[in-house]
Image 1 (cartoon, rainbow, N blue to C red):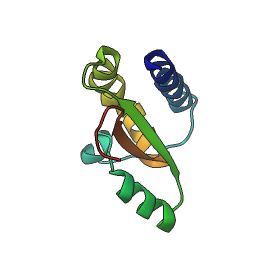
Image 2: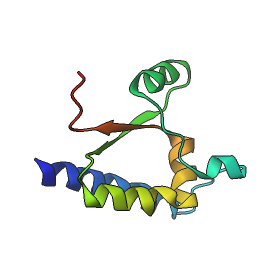
Image 3: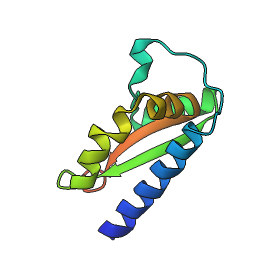
Image 4: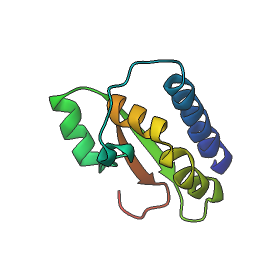
Length: 100
C-alpha cells in the first residue's frame, strides 16, 4: 500500500511538471503566489463549487522520506507552484491521520 501511494504521488507530480514545462501559458504571478497555497478538504470543496478546478490531493505520512523530499524540492519549484495554483485546488492529506 505504501508503494502504491508513493507511486501515485510520483506519477501525478511527473505529469504536473511535464505540463508545466510544455509552454502552457500561465499568467505572471506575484512573489506571494510562488508557493503552493494548500487548502483543507472543506475549503477546496467550497471553492470548487464556486469556481470549478480539479482538487489535487497530496497523500503523505510523517515518516515518508520521499514525501519530505517532494515538499522540499518539487513543491518549492516556482513553475510547479504556479501551475498547481492556477489549475488545481491542492489539499495535503495525512494518510495516517486518526480523524475520519
